[in-house]
Amino acid sequence: MKKKIIIGVVAFVVLLGIAFVYLNYRNRSLSPSGTAELTANGLTVSIPYSRPSVRGRLIFGTAEEKALQPFGMYWRLGANESTEITVNKDFLFNGQPVTAGTYRMYAIPNAGEFEIVLNSELGQ
Image 1 (cartoon, rainbow, N blue to C red):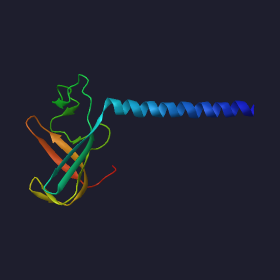
Image 2: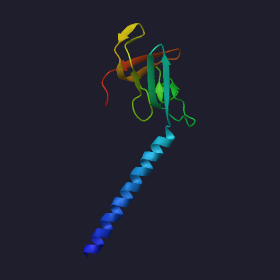
Image 3: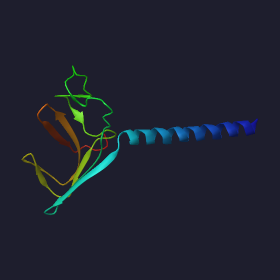
Image 4: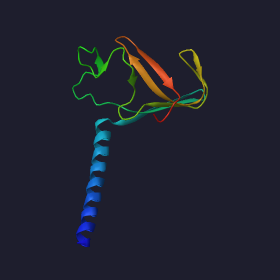
C-alpha cells in the first residue's frame, strides 16, 4: 500500500513537471523574445521584449475589424510580459526629462501614430 502511494506521488510530480515545461516552452515559442540595444554618446538604451506571433490575425485595426489591439485602446507592449526599457543616464523622452533606470513601456496605437508611455512601476 505504501509503495503504491509513493509511486502515485512520484508519477504526479513527474506529470506536473512535464506539464510545466510544456506550457512554458509553448508560450515562449509562440511569442519569441528579442532584445534591442542602442549605445550613443555614453547613453545606452536596452529593450528586451517578446514579439507576438501574428498567425494570420489582424493585430492593429478597428474593433469592427476584430483586431487584437483596437486603435485608441491602451496596450501593454510585449507578448509574454510587459516590455521594459533600461537607460543608463538621464534623458529626454518626448521633451520630458526622465531619470536613468528601468521603466515599463505602454502604447496607445492609432492608425497613423503610436503614443508611447513609460511607467516606473515594475513587476506588475
